[in-house]
Length: 197
Picture 1 (tube, rainbow, N blue to C red):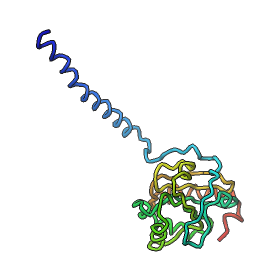
Picture 2 (cartoon, rainbow, N blue to C red; picture 1 turned 120 degrees about the horizontal axis):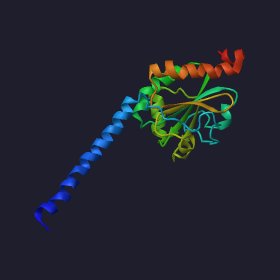
Picture 3 (cartoon, rainbow, N blue to C red; picture 1 turned 90 degrees about the vertical axis):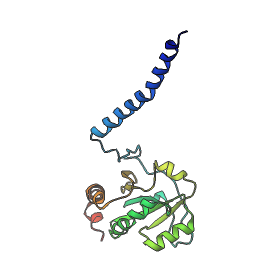
Picture 4 (cartoon, one colour; picture 1 turned 180 degrees about the vertical axis):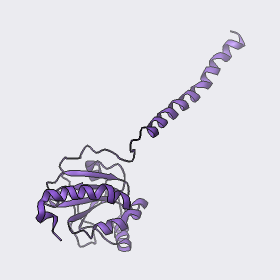
Protein backbone atom coordinates (compact mmCIF):
# COMPACT_ATOMS: atom_id res chain seq x y z
CA UNK A 1 0.00 0.00 0.00
CA UNK A 2 1.49 3.34 -1.03
CA UNK A 3 1.77 6.34 1.27
CA UNK A 4 -0.79 8.26 -0.84
CA UNK A 5 -3.37 5.48 -0.34
CA UNK A 6 -2.85 5.57 3.44
CA UNK A 7 -3.32 9.39 3.59
CA UNK A 8 -6.56 9.43 1.57
CA UNK A 9 -8.80 8.00 4.34
CA UNK A 10 -7.24 10.37 6.86
CA UNK A 11 -8.16 13.39 4.74
CA UNK A 12 -11.77 12.17 4.58
CA UNK A 13 -11.85 11.71 8.36
CA UNK A 14 -10.71 15.31 8.79
CA UNK A 15 -13.82 16.48 6.89
CA UNK A 16 -16.30 14.65 9.20
CA UNK A 17 -16.18 17.24 12.05
CA UNK A 18 -16.56 20.08 9.53
CA UNK A 19 -19.57 18.39 7.91
CA UNK A 20 -21.18 17.80 11.34
CA UNK A 21 -20.60 21.44 12.30
CA UNK A 22 -22.14 22.69 9.04
CA UNK A 23 -25.18 20.39 9.45
CA UNK A 24 -25.80 21.61 13.03
CA UNK A 25 -25.34 25.22 11.95
CA UNK A 26 -27.94 24.75 9.23
CA UNK A 27 -30.43 23.28 11.74
CA UNK A 28 -29.92 26.17 14.18
CA UNK A 29 -30.25 28.72 11.37
CA UNK A 30 -33.53 27.15 10.23
CA UNK A 31 -34.83 27.33 13.83
CA UNK A 32 -33.89 31.01 14.07
CA UNK A 33 -35.45 31.91 10.73
CA UNK A 34 -38.64 29.89 11.31
CA UNK A 35 -40.14 32.67 13.44
CA UNK A 36 -41.41 30.18 16.05
CA UNK A 37 -41.25 31.16 19.71
CA UNK A 38 -38.83 28.57 21.09
CA UNK A 39 -39.34 29.80 24.67
CA UNK A 40 -42.84 28.31 24.62
CA UNK A 41 -42.84 24.69 25.66
CA UNK A 42 -46.13 23.02 24.78
CA UNK A 43 -47.79 21.05 27.54
CA UNK A 44 -49.70 17.84 26.98
CA UNK A 45 -51.77 18.80 30.03
CA UNK A 46 -53.47 21.85 28.48
CA UNK A 47 -57.26 21.38 28.73
CA UNK A 48 -56.72 18.29 30.91
CA UNK A 49 -57.64 17.97 34.62
CA UNK A 50 -54.97 18.96 37.11
CA UNK A 51 -52.87 16.05 38.36
CA UNK A 52 -54.39 14.52 41.48
CA UNK A 53 -51.35 15.17 43.65
CA UNK A 54 -51.77 16.24 47.27
CA UNK A 55 -48.75 17.83 48.96
CA UNK A 56 -48.10 18.63 52.59
CA UNK A 57 -47.85 22.29 53.61
CA UNK A 58 -44.58 24.12 54.08
CA UNK A 59 -43.67 23.48 57.70
CA UNK A 60 -43.54 26.52 59.92
CA UNK A 61 -46.12 28.37 57.83
CA UNK A 62 -49.73 28.80 58.92
CA UNK A 63 -51.29 27.93 55.57
CA UNK A 64 -52.71 24.88 53.83
CA UNK A 65 -50.79 22.49 51.63
CA UNK A 66 -51.56 21.60 48.05
CA UNK A 67 -54.87 19.87 47.36
CA UNK A 68 -56.33 19.38 43.85
CA UNK A 69 -59.82 19.99 45.28
CA UNK A 70 -58.78 23.58 46.00
CA UNK A 71 -59.09 24.41 42.30
CA UNK A 72 -62.84 23.87 42.12
CA UNK A 73 -65.04 26.86 41.28
CA UNK A 74 -62.23 29.44 41.16
CA UNK A 75 -59.49 30.68 38.88
CA UNK A 76 -56.07 29.67 40.19
CA UNK A 77 -52.42 30.12 39.37
CA UNK A 78 -49.99 27.38 40.36
CA UNK A 79 -46.44 28.70 40.52
CA UNK A 80 -43.57 26.19 40.72
CA UNK A 81 -40.68 27.81 42.60
CA UNK A 82 -37.64 27.23 44.78
CA UNK A 83 -35.59 29.49 47.02
CA UNK A 84 -32.44 28.37 45.17
CA UNK A 85 -33.86 29.56 41.83
CA UNK A 86 -32.54 32.99 40.73
CA UNK A 87 -35.28 33.52 38.10
CA UNK A 88 -37.89 32.79 40.81
CA UNK A 89 -36.43 35.63 42.86
CA UNK A 90 -36.58 37.92 39.81
CA UNK A 91 -40.26 37.18 39.08
CA UNK A 92 -41.39 37.25 42.72
CA UNK A 93 -42.34 40.97 42.84
CA UNK A 94 -44.66 40.33 39.89
CA UNK A 95 -46.31 37.45 41.76
CA UNK A 96 -46.81 39.77 44.73
CA UNK A 97 -48.68 42.16 42.40
CA UNK A 98 -50.77 39.31 40.94
CA UNK A 99 -51.70 38.23 44.48
CA UNK A 100 -53.49 41.56 44.96
CA UNK A 101 -56.12 40.44 42.42
CA UNK A 102 -58.75 38.77 44.63
CA UNK A 103 -60.27 37.02 41.61
CA UNK A 104 -57.25 34.68 41.39
CA UNK A 105 -56.15 32.07 43.95
CA UNK A 106 -52.34 31.81 44.14
CA UNK A 107 -50.87 28.40 44.94
CA UNK A 108 -47.19 27.65 45.28
CA UNK A 109 -45.52 24.34 44.51
CA UNK A 110 -42.20 24.50 46.38
CA UNK A 111 -39.79 22.38 44.36
CA UNK A 112 -36.84 20.45 45.86
CA UNK A 113 -36.24 23.02 48.57
CA UNK A 114 -35.25 23.04 52.22
CA UNK A 115 -38.10 24.32 54.42
CA UNK A 116 -35.89 26.85 56.21
CA UNK A 117 -34.66 28.27 52.90
CA UNK A 118 -38.20 28.49 51.50
CA UNK A 119 -39.42 30.31 54.64
CA UNK A 120 -36.45 32.71 54.50
CA UNK A 121 -37.17 33.43 50.80
CA UNK A 122 -40.82 34.28 51.58
CA UNK A 123 -39.79 36.25 54.67
CA UNK A 124 -37.48 38.44 52.59
CA UNK A 125 -39.66 38.89 49.49
CA UNK A 126 -43.21 38.42 50.80
CA UNK A 127 -45.69 35.59 50.44
CA UNK A 128 -48.09 35.83 47.48
CA UNK A 129 -49.52 32.33 47.99
CA UNK A 130 -52.84 31.24 49.48
CA UNK A 131 -51.46 27.71 49.86
CA UNK A 132 -48.03 26.09 49.45
CA UNK A 133 -47.36 22.43 48.80
CA UNK A 134 -43.89 20.97 49.29
CA UNK A 135 -42.45 18.72 46.57
CA UNK A 136 -39.20 17.53 48.16
CA UNK A 137 -38.60 14.66 45.73
CA UNK A 138 -39.70 16.40 42.52
CA UNK A 139 -42.28 13.68 41.83
CA UNK A 140 -45.24 16.10 41.84
CA UNK A 141 -43.46 18.36 39.35
CA UNK A 142 -43.10 15.37 37.01
CA UNK A 143 -46.85 14.76 37.28
CA UNK A 144 -47.43 18.41 36.35
CA UNK A 145 -45.07 18.16 33.37
CA UNK A 146 -42.62 20.71 34.75
CA UNK A 147 -39.47 21.21 32.67
CA UNK A 148 -37.74 23.73 34.92
CA UNK A 149 -38.32 26.33 37.57
CA UNK A 150 -40.14 28.70 37.56
CA UNK A 151 -43.22 27.58 35.68
CA UNK A 152 -46.78 28.77 36.19
CA UNK A 153 -50.09 27.13 35.32
CA UNK A 154 -53.48 28.80 34.95
CA UNK A 155 -56.27 26.55 36.25
CA UNK A 156 -59.92 27.07 35.32
CA UNK A 157 -62.85 26.72 37.73
CA UNK A 158 -63.54 23.27 36.28
CA UNK A 159 -60.10 22.09 37.47
CA UNK A 160 -58.46 21.96 34.05
CA UNK A 161 -55.12 23.45 33.07
CA UNK A 162 -55.76 26.31 30.64
CA UNK A 163 -52.30 27.83 30.13
CA UNK A 164 -48.68 27.17 31.01
CA UNK A 165 -45.90 29.75 31.23
CA UNK A 166 -42.34 28.45 31.22
CA UNK A 167 -39.69 30.60 32.88
CA UNK A 168 -40.05 33.79 34.87
CA UNK A 169 -42.85 36.22 34.17
CA UNK A 170 -42.03 39.69 32.92
CA UNK A 171 -44.37 42.68 33.06
CA UNK A 172 -44.92 42.23 29.32
CA UNK A 173 -45.71 38.49 29.52
CA UNK A 174 -48.22 39.14 32.30
CA UNK A 175 -49.90 41.95 30.37
CA UNK A 176 -49.94 40.33 26.92
CA UNK A 177 -50.13 36.57 27.65
CA UNK A 178 -51.33 35.75 31.15
CA UNK A 179 -53.96 38.37 31.90
CA UNK A 180 -55.89 37.98 28.62
CA UNK A 181 -56.17 34.26 29.38
CA UNK A 182 -57.15 34.96 32.99
CA UNK A 183 -59.92 37.28 31.74
CA UNK A 184 -61.17 34.59 29.33
CA UNK A 185 -61.37 32.05 32.14
CA UNK A 186 -63.01 34.56 34.51
CA UNK A 187 -65.64 35.27 31.86
CA UNK A 188 -66.68 31.61 32.09
CA UNK A 189 -67.65 32.22 35.72
CA UNK A 190 -70.15 34.86 34.64
CA UNK A 191 -70.77 38.27 36.23
CA UNK A 192 -70.82 36.98 39.80
CA UNK A 193 -67.45 35.24 39.42
CA UNK A 194 -65.82 38.13 37.62
CA UNK A 195 -66.89 40.67 40.25
CA UNK A 196 -65.73 38.95 43.43
CA UNK A 197 -63.70 41.87 44.72
